[in-house]
Image (cartoon, rainbow, N blue to C red):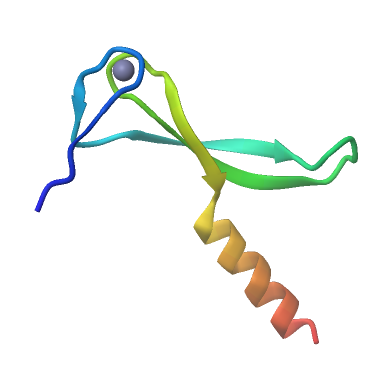
Length: 67
Ligand SMILES: [Zn+2]
C-alpha cells in the first residue's frame, strides 16, 4: 500500500519525501539534538521536523550503558 499525501505548498501528490539531518537547538542553551527534516522533493518546502530516531536510540543506549 502506498501512502499518498499532498504537499501543502505546491499541492503535488507525494509518495516520497526528502529526509535531511538538521540540528535542533534546545531553548537558549548550547545543548543541541540531532533532528531530521522531511521536505517536499519538488519544491523543498519543509513539511515536518522530528528528532532523528536513530540518534535518539543511540543516546538512550549510551545512557543505559553508562549506569
Ligand atoms: Zn511541494
